[in-house]
Image (cartoon, rainbow, N blue to C red; front, side):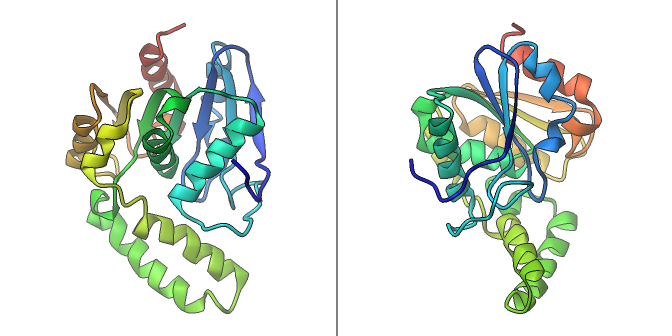
Length: 229
């Protein structure tokens, strides 16, 4: 896979590859509570997504599906044939789309706070996002900052646009995680787990950012799923 960007990433540990994918508007630093803990058991890679952190924006489309193709290019560049994927929020959406599109490249899949579309987000959260997106688009042609803001919000309004029946394409053993007070509707998280063959579903006490705020609890759930090596 050829790409127009070179990813910035953090790399630690040895063993089977485990790739950590951060959420919208963040960078690999989101996983500060996971990188070292998982590196005791796995070869951890934590890249910054296109246009996030220290990875350049490039010229390709700013979409979840493009980010999934970027992930394939990253794996090829690092000579990673197959990997465990852990994605948070939009990172979970990237991992989900990647696992549907390139099932042969995924060992185990962890989706943390992922969603199929904007309808899966609680309206109290989504409505301000949609209003902000409309305003940002109005000013996108006047400044680079407004354009970037519009692109980031656009991901949460227009993507990932996955139909529930598409999840049957996922062949990897999958863990679906969400917080008990997550911004993703509980019924939506349960729908994702139900439509992925043999997926495991876990709700952890906390909000959307449970991995960052409660790393020990989150890490135990992930390592238990990965076989607690």
